[in-house]
Image (cartoon, rainbow, N blue to C red; front, top):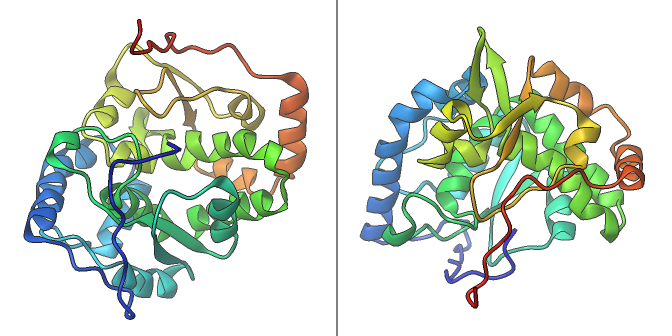
Length: 266
């Protein structure tokens, strides 16, 4: 996750609600309208079923308190606005308590097509549909409980499993590649790229390989992992994930597929 942001977080009132401006609601409405045709074409049915269950508002930013009330009935989860970017320790701890931390700001028009850090559109439109499914919610909880027991040196290894599944995972559905992850659902450009571009690799889902695979937050991925069946992901929640992390660390990172970063001086 990025270490800083140009955005200012919004604070919830005593009821857990945030007042968004008319322009912010308009950004949400335009993002939803722009993304809906793509998700109907390219997202996996598990995500689409969750989106239909939640019935999110299309013309204004939803209230995290309202979403929490729905999720509590479905899976026992809640969504909590966070005042700023949070570290891995806090992130894993919240997941362990079945609380999803939601960045409270919404992107500007300038960042409409791609934003490096998560915003409320990514958090609600991207993440909450899968959190309405008890099986995916249980996987996120397993990541959280493993992270809550992990040493700080394990965090960047463990988060890769979350990144390449809940954030940027793919699955095979009726012989076609479909997107599953929240980062893809909320990205106007990477969603289509992830399932149709010839650029990235698409490898079989494998926990140890994923834990050893570098990723970047500032560009589209150069590789994705494909679930033949979501049960592969649910089975991963039953593993000793910290033992997997320690094995991955002993094996070391796999080669970086990304181009070198270019600095301003270059």
